[in-house]
Length: 214
Ligand SMILES: Nc1ncnc2c1ncn2[C@@H]1O[C@H](COP(=O)(O)OP(=O)(O)O)[C@@H](O)[C@H]1O
Ligand SMILES: [Mg+2]
Image (cartoon, rainbow, N blue to C red):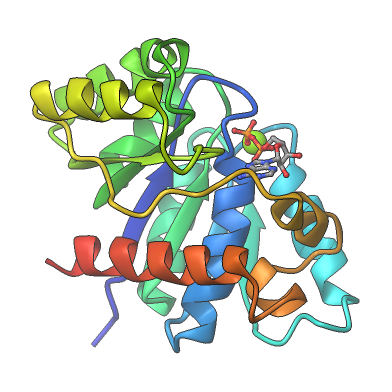
């Protein structure tokens, strides 16, 4: 029987919020945990596709991650194909709300929204939140570049909870390791398996996995 893997769409209108970085890091951490992973790059900028190409010749890349890029009417059939052959498919989306974003969100078992714990990032996520609500898809927010503790972070946590939105407990700090690993076509868990960044990503990967398996 065909497998039906879970689809996680990583979406947020704000550019630079960490969508592509998260797609890459999560893909590696999930693959290391024995999950078969595919990534689908639907951002015309193609950063994740470049990362995957770098990965082909990266000495530290130890796991296999299928990467494909597509857009438009092919998106849904490509997604079905990837889903049939993998446990989890991560979609990296562009910072716009268009028909492709809708297709991705419609197909998602989870819409993962990275944001800095600050009001403008939550404002920027409104379009994605609205789309997910229209499509009745479950959402999880995740703080990225988050200070360990700050008044603003606490305030944002409270605001998110008060709105009935789900915030993942694991947050990612601002760490050069994320950007460096990405530039080398690997994940932080490969570049430095014992670093705090690696621990964070493994925790996040587990949280995402249990969320879609519920
Ligand atoms: N937690 C983080 N710590 C350090 N650098 C980060 C972090 N998250 C993202 N970055 C870097 O910020 C830049 C923008 O992230 P990116 O994933 O491309 O954002 P998006 O895809 O949402 O536009 C990239 O260079 C990325 O490596
Ligand atoms: Mg991106």
